[in-house]
Amino acid sequence: MDDYALVLNAGSSSLKFCVYQRPRDNDWEIAARGQIEGIGTSPRLSAKDAQGAVLVNNSLDASVADGHAAIEALASWLRSKWPGAHVLGVGHRVVHGGTRYGQPVLLTRQTLSDLYELVPLAPLHQPYNLAAIDAVFERLPGVPQVACFDTGFHAGHSQVVELIPLPKEICKSGLRRYGFHGLSYEYIASVLPTVAPAIAKARVIVAHLGSGASLCALKDGRSLDSTLGFTALDGLCMGTRPGAIDPGVLLYLFQNLELSAKEVETMLYKQSGLLGISGISNDMRDLLGRSEPEARLAVDYFVYRAAKEIGALAAVLGGVDALVFTAGIGENSSEIRRRICEASSWLGLDLDAQANTSGNSRISTEQSRVSAWVVPTNEELMIARHTWSLLGFMQPVS
Ligand code: ADP
Image (cartoon, rainbow, N blue to C red; front, side):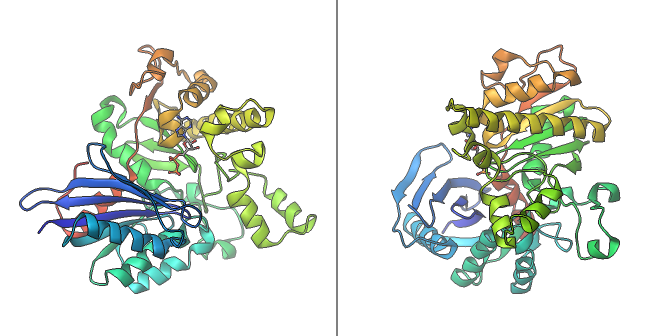
């Protein structure tokens, strides 16, 4: 009988998964990559095999309305696809590890309850990440589970970088800048020696531009700083989050508009950013296809903030040798890359317009002092590597 292991990345309305298979006497291979989307609205299960062939693409019953039901639906598809399979372990993405959990950890009921305490720091992600763990504990009680944290790669930032300059007593409870998207940055740092050896040890700014967006300053493959902080609200403009705003705005919302904490939380996590500015969409692809001035303004602000923060991280690094784009927008939108590179030309970055639209990895000219790159991220593989090493398995390669 073949052995299997799973990687799960559970969000508010989607459950992304990878199935790894270990045929007898062989190393791990990816057998399926897929997702359940539209949880709570119009749930749909889709998955492809390692070669990109469609394994399933079905709408699901509307009763798949939460994380537990999504795990049930996934389990029943896995059972029908690989009857009698033996699941050896499950690796999860967990957004916030707080002060206690930096490195990946083998999950117990106690760890899970510690991680639930961090829900207020990541309300858009943490509850859904943890619901998936809870569902697997119930469904497959004997199977070991590992949590891999988005904050982990940033552990070890200097005291100054981590500081939130509020009164000391307040900060004692764990109020500091953590940084997120760590699994993505760790993956990029792990492949630079192969895809761009010349910059692997250099001063690199990685731009993870997806629904959530941030930058990371890498030196010698280690994170020195990032634009996200205590929560995933800081820094760049995102799909539904504003990025950095004057904290006085929050006082104004509470004191003058008399909004409740819950209303402000909803506004900050779900109604702002590209969606708030445009009033049209949180999706960059939609906005780039629209001609309304509000859609243009949202894209202009996204580019402006990214370029501004690239300047700030260049200062952190004492100069920059390379800029790397990744995630949905960074990997797929040549227009956004072009605009950010043009706004960063003062750093010595000269974009190669042809390379930028041709699917090349390097998108700057030969003469460019600062090079620019597109490197696809793979957070699931990073989770698999951590999970496998904690559970004592051989590492998967893709
Ligand atoms: P997440 O995993 O955080 O949900 P992704 O990394 O998948 O986010 O990125 C989603 C974003 O990528 C969306 O704003 C989407 O519009 C954008 N995107 C994907 N493809 C393109 C494209 N070809 N052009 C512009 N934006 C794109």
